[in-house]
Amino acid sequence: MAKAEIIIGSHVSLSAPEYYLGSVKEALSYGANTLMIYTGAPRNSFRLPLEKFRLEEAFALIKKHQLDETKFVIHAPYILNLADKQKEDSYAFAISYLKEEIIRAEKMHIPTIVLHPGSHLGLGVEYGIKNLCQALNEIFLEDSHVKIAIESMAGKGNEIGKNLVELKMIYDGVSKKDRLGFCLDTCHLSDAGYQLENIDEFLKMVDETIGIKNVLVLHINDSKNPLGSHKDRHENIGYGYLGFGTLLKYIYLPLLKDIPKILETPYFNGLAPYQYEIANFRNKEFKPFKD
Ligand code: FE
Ligand code: FE
Ligand code: ZN
Image 1 (cartoon, protein in one colour):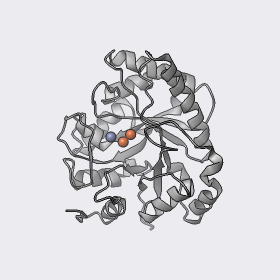
Image 2 (cartoon, protein in one colour):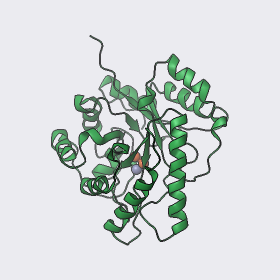
Image 3 (cartoon, rainbow, N blue to C red):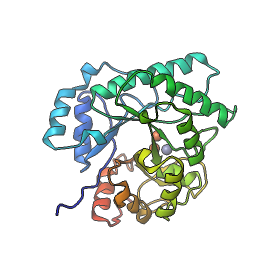
Image 4 (cartoon, protein in one colour):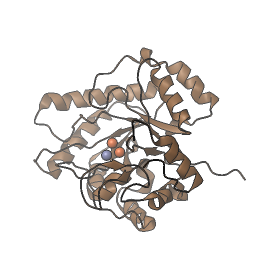
């Protein structure tokens, strides 16, 4: 019997001159079978026309290597803040940006967009969640198969979505639930205070709130800080407070096997760590790769 293949990749870049073709090549160079991209810079919302992206060549390479595009992920820029409405212009802009991102995602054959839920800027969790849900309801008025996965946050500053209860509140406030899902980030969860080591216990809580079936993406990161620190500083796998053994459980648990696992760990000495981290997960053994 063929060994069940894990679905693992990392954040990869999308930049000149090869754009999406380059993203796919980068993922392959890490031994990955999925990927996550920002459709431009993560910190701004300027986006090139898709004609530049070398999509056809990328699709051909994806096909050649039999990668499953339905496991690929786009990450929306993190400057969007749908949780605050004080600046009407920024709120309206973020909504129209996401409508366009959904169209880009369709054309790139990528079914999932990860979105940070945003910050209430001191006006309270309920205020933030209400604004986010209103925005999502407007975005989902236009039909598409593309889903938005709200990411669990570390609870830095006034971030909303810092625990499962808040994610569930977001779920409850969205009408088209078939368009909504979640992205669980292991660094953020630990920083938010969730003990991930007992995987059955943690996933039971997930299932009782947002539902495991609604988890569309897992961000697999170690954390530079201890449980409940609310810092959001990612660490390389096996070098932080979560540790290799705990994260390995999330890679191989049969219940999570269809969910793409995406690494967003930091570069070391200017080098991407992903080929080492992916190899360690495939070998189920932690081999140090930096000093
Ligand atoms: Fe994120
Ligand atoms: Fe993340
Ligand atoms: Zn983070």
